[in-house]
Structures are given as structure tokens and as C-alpha cells.
Figure 1 (cartoon, rainbow, N blue to C red):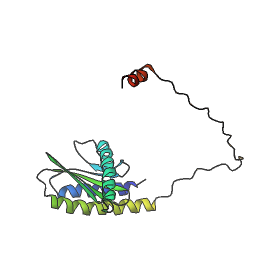
Figure 2 (figure 1 turned 180 degrees about the horizontal axis):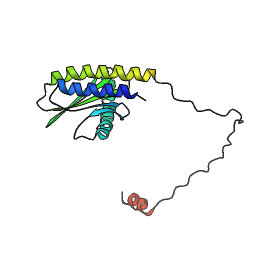
Figure 3 (figure 1 turned 45 degrees about the vertical axis):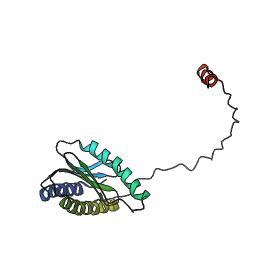
Figure 4 (figure 1 turned 120 degrees about the vertical axis):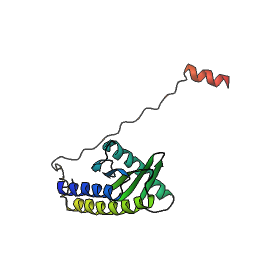
Length: 170
């Protein structure tokens, strides 16, 4: 769990990013699991975008791995009306930016990479400082159980009328 103060810092970074790149129409920080960390996405469902980002990330990671190009860094999608850019943000998060078609893509990448690095550092530090999840206690007083296997009966196959009809016609 990320502390509220760190979440506010991430939100501030998203707002500053939108100020530095005026053609941005939205910004979202999400976990690689598809859960929203922070968002500034007016007019776009942040939960849906985070889930779609996680799905696209899964494919992008596999493509990078299959081609021997190393770990995931970024993904750019250009649509008829604009761009969706996703950048790695530390070990467990990604930054997704929505931009108008007239955005300077070089500037988008420059600012997106910088913001992704800052957000990643913040979230990775918060994760490292978080206490580990509580362990569930297991009872050691129970004796181990042994399973007995029952023999399986062999399957019998029957021919249906459809199968009989198709085999006789061929």
C-alpha cells in the first residue's frame, strides 16, 4: 500500500507533466497489475484505461522478450486522433499518457521518460519501506494426511449418430 503522501506526490507529478506538455489530454500511473495508482484523465475511465494498459504491457513485454530486445521500456500507439504512450515506472508501475495528434512526439517521450523515472523511484521506495504483509499462521499440531489413490476405470467410447453419419459419408 502506497502512503497517501506519496500518492499525492504522484498526482502532483502528473499535473506538472500536463503543464509541461500542453497537448496531453490525460495521464495515469498504474500498477503492472492494472490497478490505478493516480490519475488525471478527464473524460476517460481510469480503471478501464489501467486494465487495458496492463493487457498491452503484457503483450509488449512478450514482444520485447521474443525479439531479444531486453526488458520493457515504452510503448507508443498512434490513433487517428492522438497518441497513447506507456512508459516503465520502476519495477511495479507504468505511466500512460494520452496526447493530441499534434503533440511533439520527441517532447512526449522526453517528458514521459523523465516522469516515469520519478514516479518509479517514488513508488519503488514506498514499496520498499512498506511493512511486509502479515503471514498466516499455520497449525503444526495436525498430523500429515496421506491420500489413497483409487484406481481409475477406463473410459469407454460410444459413437453418436452424428459421428457415425460423418464417417460413413467419407
